[in-house]
Length: 99
Image (cartoon, rainbow, N blue to C red; front, side):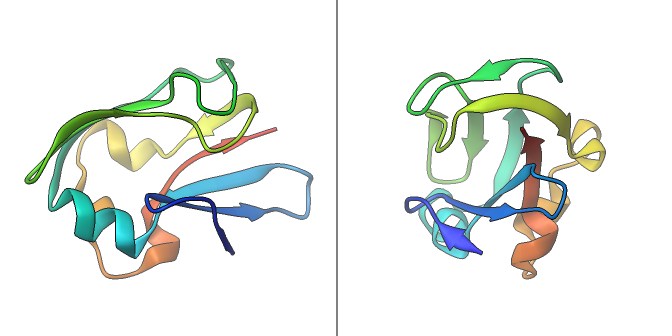
């Protein structure tokens, strides 16, 4: 798992896709995440382009994309709750998969 900046980790998957999640440092910097606005599946991302909007304890901010590609899927758990983003397990804090 590679850290791309202070907010994210990226992990190449065996099928050629890339999983993106929030790092422990990102959680520390933002505080408890209360809301996240995610792109739809099929959206094309560019490095440093529009990615996600986050409402958190310490900040309300738009965060640029750490990678380029097309969104394959977003974490379905995030549509109803941000609890997994505030968990202690970094692997559980995945946001989306891109190709």
